[in-house]
Image (cartoon, rainbow, N blue to C red; front, side, top):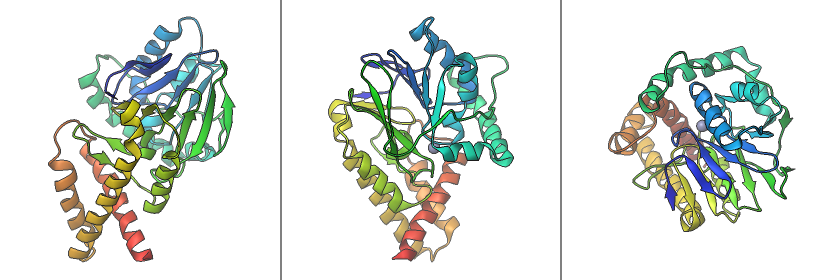
Amino acid sequence: MVINRSGPIADRFWSIAHPGMPLFLLDGDKPAIFDGGLACLANVYIDHIRSVLGERTLSFCFLTHSHFDHIGSVFWLKKAFPRMDVCANSRLATILERPRAVEVIKMLSKSAEDMVRGEVKIDGNLPGFEPFGIDRPVSDGDRIGIGDGLSVEVYATPGHTRDCMSYYIPERKILIASEALGIPVEDGYIYTDFLIGYDVYIESVKKLGTLDVDVLCFGHSFVYTGEDAKNYVPRVLACAEDFYNMTARFLEEEDGDLEAVKQRVKALEYDSRPGAKQPEPAYLLNLEARILAVKQKMEAG
Ligand SMILES: [Zn+2]
């Protein structure tokens, strides 16, 4: 099944607040939240989490990567649930120690407010991004018990970013893959955002492809369950390869002219695609990184 709403997804497993910018909540002995969302939605997330947990608190917050729309509300979540341990790649802590990086994250967080105001009923001053500390750095191969006989397995899945982490709950066959497995959109296309390298991204996709998954959670818009989850990985590999071949051909035809290639890819992949998609400035920024990743692979031979 393809799910594009917030609310209960599976037994005691929830998509929180906003399907486009979701957090995922696994309720139990030690409730855990996955991903950190947008700063301006912090109060919406907190209200929804409280409506599920009542008087109980969060024990864990597992972060997937350092992009502004995946760590935005963590400072506010930690304020609301002080006993919650923030778990992430240690690279993420290093990024948040850099004033320039924090400035950029604040700026991007602010720029998302108008878009969100149009979709969610929120008024007044919205929370902004504030840096936060990592309580528990996690690495590939870690396995963290979260009570009720459940555990979270940590998979380093670089390719979208360097610090990209995916989380798998084997007892429930739930995979929180975020952008490590691309962003599927309504017409079945999958944006493959390999921002830091093509081969490393494919390697991460294949690594997640070895897992037995019943519930597959992406960074945006959709959760896939059952057969849709099981049959997904070959689709993302095919989309990545198609994108690579198209971009490589354009780079040759345009004699390496990055701007010309960008326009041709955008016309096919973005402009002609109906339905909800990421804002154009973010798309263009990511597109440039993806084209450079293709170019780098072509040059490496
Ligand atoms: Zn991202």
